[in-house]
Image 1 (tube, rainbow, N blue to C red):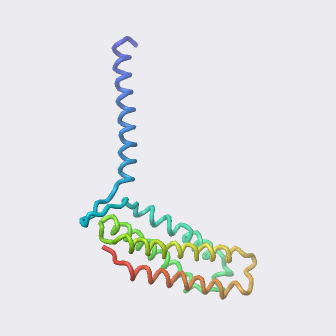
Image 2: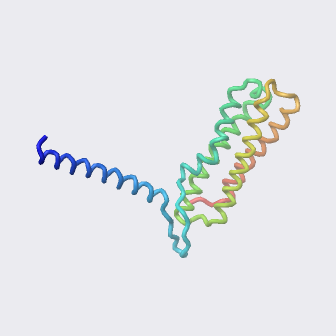
Image 3: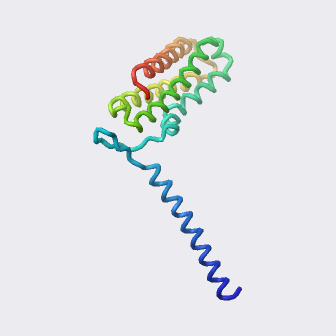
Length: 167
């Protein structure tokens, strides 16, 4: 390589490096952007998919576990497991629309925090269900407790989607 080729190569390499760095910086600032609401308030922009995943990840894992354990299906019944599955899906969709509404300033911070606390409670219930369903074999007293926890989870899901307005 002669001197001109080296200069062109280094210039091209520097350009590529600058473009990559610019892309990372753009993605970083875009992900940490701030929402400016018409009423003058500001809040961080929520990642709707990330928010929903954060608050339903454990529930989905529990759902898979409940479906694979035959003794639980017999104990709880297929209908209860289907209701649990629907509750998880309903909660996930509502959380995504909640975050979108929050980003659009249609959901105020107190509503958002109330809903987030409700979803955190649902995840706590899912952890309890997971812990109980891990008993092998399932203890006799675990069946009624599992039913109660699943009913509480389903009820929390229904109350969460009707209380908070969505855009």
